[in-house]
Image (tube, helix red, strand yellow):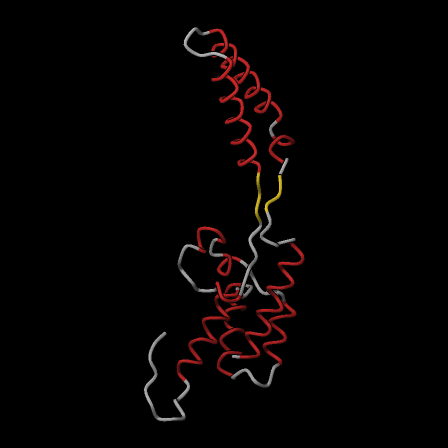
Length: 169
């Protein structure tokens, strides 16, 4: 399990570094580049609403300024992009982190180097190696959860050397 955890952690670190996943918010201007006509239409709509708000007797400059501030704030929030950091501890966890990170461990495949490290390790059981080879032959790749689940099941099936029952965690 330690070898598999080490390989998965190094693979996760590689992906985080390669994709710039640091959990920090950044402005993503792709929307403006990909949809210039929609941006122009939104600007025309803003100007039309602003004119109506400014000239109406029950709204005035204060409402117009509030509307503009709200629109700028919402635009900035919608342009923020956060690339969450992948972590080993998140694999197989179904809680609020899934809303933020997604279930990345099901869709991200291990690199051929990582699979080879696991298959060539003497610490990994033959059963896990055979199962990984079987998954690769059927799916064409193995994802993080496949390897994590195999290692977890292997760990659970090991006999307890102390002869005592363990509590589930």
